[in-house]
Picture 1 (tube, rainbow, N blue to C red):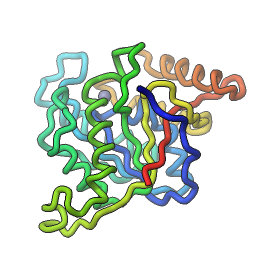
Picture 2 (picture 1 turned 120 degrees about the vertical axis):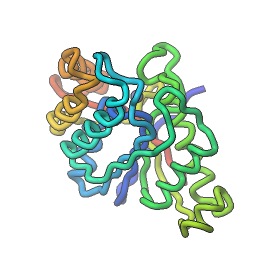
Picture 3 (picture 1 turned 135 degrees about the vertical axis):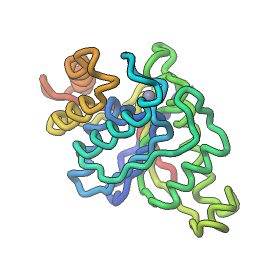
Amino acid sequence: MTFPPSAPPLSDVQRALVVSAHPDDVDFGAAGTVARWVDEGIEVTYLVVTRGDAGGFDDTPRDQMPLLREAEQRAAAKVVGVEQVEFLDGYADGTLTPSIELRRDITRAIRRYRPDRVLTTSPVRRWERIAGPGHPDHVAVGEAVTCAIYPDARNRFAHPELLRDEGLEPWVVREVWFQGGPDPDHIVDITQTYPRKAAALAAHATQTSHEDVEARMRTIFQAVARRAGLPEGSLAEAFTVLRTA
Ligand SMILES: [Zn+2]
């Protein structure tokens, strides 16, 4: 099973919500594209499910890691131009499943921020490469987000406490973008915004300071651009884009 061909992106998007499992997911997979959205005047919000408490490579005290990684993601967002960053509480890095509780918490964010477009990690694995995009937390968040888009956020009888206790009316998300899935076919030229993506990645010092991430990323995103036939030296991110309404 894989995705159908991408739909052409909507042209009238005012608000976008990015949902990721860990601090740094959006910056590795999508920050160059998000920076373009910000430049186009789209209001972008990040919702991060965990504080990445199982990440890192050095001997940072483990109780410091969530605090450091939250601060890193907030700094990275600022570089890209995203002002609003929200973290969920109660979810530990490495333990995510598309549970009804996670669907409810994502539904709450969708109803509060009312995005036209949602970007998240792919719920479909790339079987040729199990690491990275195939982290179980990424797959779980992609599935929970998809369930929150349909049916939960648009059905007033789903998670009834959201309407009853918090006054959150149903909301229809019209489009979803998946990063890290199999055969992504919607290419975004990020040559102009790449310096901001690189700075955002550098902000995740607990994750990226042990290697030359910038050089590795440049190679990856140049290859994406080359495969898409963009001019030599261009950089690109790739997604699957689907209509959800
Ligand atoms: Zn991750």
